[in-house]
Amino acid sequence: MDDAWLIVRDQNRSLQSSTKLFFEGTPAKVLANKISWKIIGSLEAKPKYAREIAKELSLNEQSVYYHVKKLLECGIIKVVEEQSIRGANAKKLSLSGDGVSILFRKPSKEMQKPYISNGRLCRFFDDFLKDNAFDGYIVVGSPEPHGPFRAVARDGHYAAQLSYYLGKCSGHPTNFFVRLDTDIKAEKLYNENLILIGGPITNLLVSEVNQYLQVKFIEPNYWSGIVDKEGNVFSGETDALIAKIRNPFDRDRCVIVIAGVRHQGTKSAIIGLTECSEEVLRGYNGQPNYALIIKGFDQDGDGKVDYTEVLKSYPY
Image 1 (spheres, rainbow, N blue to C red):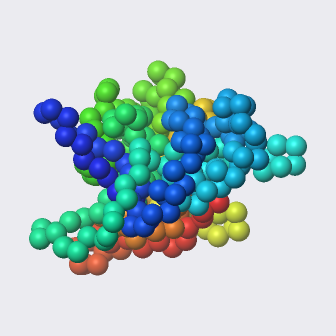
Image 2: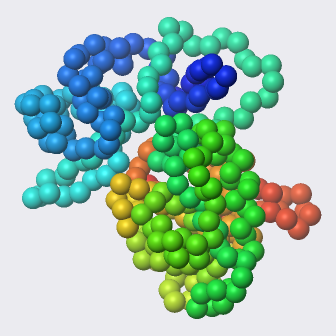
């Protein structure tokens, strides 16, 4: 099973949908059951717990759990959140894509032109895709002195690099999707899908969500580096954090932090996500919470970061 993108021609438009690509018939067997289709239909609107699905469809809970297990094994649905309810581990479920595609045999011809896969990158930002359009905001630090450190952001232009690659995963956004951190605070847009670029000194939104991260910037001296739960500290100038969590202000939304200890680190993270996404995001399997530490290197000796490596990943 692979992640793939299906291009649908609709009159003069090209619409892009995420799909799970299979080379064998197991999904067909699972989808042959009417209850499986009912569960998929129930999850089309929003993520739900199995118990909610059973109640909505007036089905036996055990039957729903059985078919949910089969759908999870196929990768047709995924777990987006887990929590303990009266001692039991309850899982919130969601569709893992817009559909399923089954090939009778694997492709035998290689494309003549070079092709760079964006599958893992698109999957990582899947929460930001709605009705084939980008749903959320890319938030950069203000270029004016602001915040308690009166900092001036120097990494906002990296959003252009990320935007170019995200454009390969989704259609046009429905609104102006780039905001300054000061704009988000002024307009109180906390409960949206947010991609936060830059560290907590220059991006005030990062300083506000930092407390909710499992791997985070050291407070109150953010310059001293990034620390994980084991106490490992990453403080190099090209070290950076990429973290994905549920939005603490709206659990149905998502926040992704892309931030370096210094602005060179933020550039390292952007390079890793856009130019090396298949390798950098290899450990990401759709978890609602995920983090990794990136380190940038100057391989060609021109004084600029041009290559990145993952120092450590945290699929918590």
